[in-house]
Amino acid sequence: MNARLDHPGIGQSIDDDGRLAASYLFMCAMAAGIAMIGLLCNSASVIIGAMLVSPLMGPIVRLGLGIGTLSFTRVWCSLGTLACGMTVALVVSVVIVAVSPLKVATPEILARTNPNIFDMVAATLSGLAGGYAMIRNRGGTIVGVAIATALMPPMAVVGFGVATGQFAFARGALLLFTTNLAAIALSVTLVCTFYGFGGAATRKAVAWQFAVGALVLLPLALPLSTALADIARQTRTVNTVRAAMTTALGNQQMRILDLKLDNTGATPLLDVTFAVQAFTREEDERLRRALAPALAAGTVMRFQPVIVADPLGTEGGRSSLGSAVVGTVVASASVAEDPTAGDIVRHFPLPLLDSHVDAAKRSIELVVSPSARVSLATLRQMEATLADGAPDWRVGIIPSPRPLPPILFARGSAALGNSQMGTLADLAWAMRHWGSSSVLVEGRASSDGHGPVDLAQARAEAVRGWLEQQGFMVTLGASYPLPDQQRREDAEGVDAFRSVFVHVTDAQAPDAPPHDP
Image (cartoon, rainbow, N blue to C red; front, side):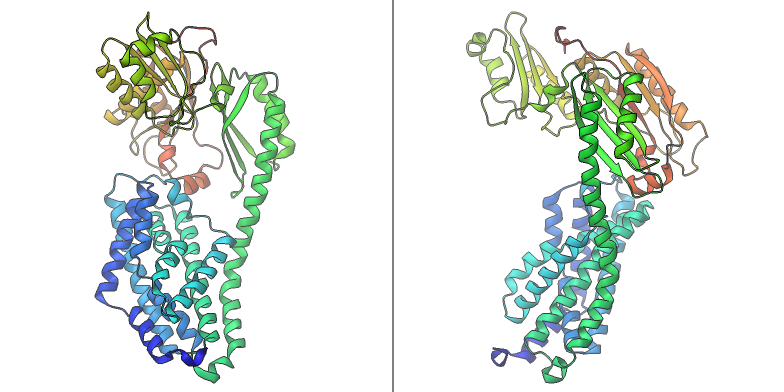
């Protein structure tokens, strides 16, 4: 089998693919730019484009061949090529983040900051496939290998972490990139050795190659294995917390909307958002007592209740392609008679939890399903567009129960500008649709030393003044510093701490009439 291979020709082809050239650096820059834009916009399709054009696979395969043939010239040349490519990618990523108004860590960014042992396994399998593809002249599969290992996006996340000063992100992404690089290179080494590259002398050095592999991979495998164990442990704890909350609040309807457990810092943090009909101080204390045995000692518990009339209603929903609508439609016969109302309900582009059409009052109410991941600003704009298209009808789009988005402020500022006013208008629109009139306003500030000490209080007071002008009853609060804030800023970014959070503290009664849009 090995005799039929053109070893010199294959080696030359791998050397050519992994050589440092202007075209290689150009492609590194382009791939880094595409990846960074996709990460900032949270677009998986754009990120896949970066994986497709990333040229880093060539020098990594050459590195594996160099180790397999004990060619130190190949090893050093490929390492130099990789270093140049990574430097270009890092610089491009940092520049894009520096000039971009988007500096919030998206889910696509966060997904690449906490690798585990499965990432090493995937990279190893990809390296075996890549080495086989190169040696057996099946280069078309290299595209799939590049996608699977995702070499460029982790390097772009390193640039994001450096540009924003969130070095915990940079460390995690660099670990992922290093894992992929080492696992692919050493897997290619195994394939090269199997196919007889370097002759009999190299095959006698297999023990040495395994020693090098163990020396490189073991230090990487230890933190990755620990990360996987932490994920498994956290999953078990989350399930226990869900069961404890259901039991503790069993006297009323309740549904957990979001649950996060962070055990990475010195102080563990439990952050729970849940829909509930009411949430008193006594229930808060009872819930804390119920959860304490399930959590590590000293865990900080943070509850974010979303007060709604029907918490369990958020579990329902329907497909946007389906025809069934949960709930009742008032004067449903008139829907068929009036094409405007019927068209609005049938052709609404988002999944609905419920809908109401009242021909006598000329009103249409669309209750959006929680499965529709759409911002309040988008829903508000959709409502305005539908109302403009049906002037004879009162159209209302009711958002599903959710935590309200924070009002973000500039560094050191408590002023309400256009951005803050727009967010507040969206919040007020949603709360009126929910029939809410009482809120708790929680001001925050980052710990980077910009602005006065009472900045969190000043921000909360500015938001309270605006909401009170709109007719809401506001309870004021400020949280600075939050428990373990410095660690949380490193993990979540500082933007979330230059903000004001608004929490609904009441809800429309179940039998109350719908609020006019």
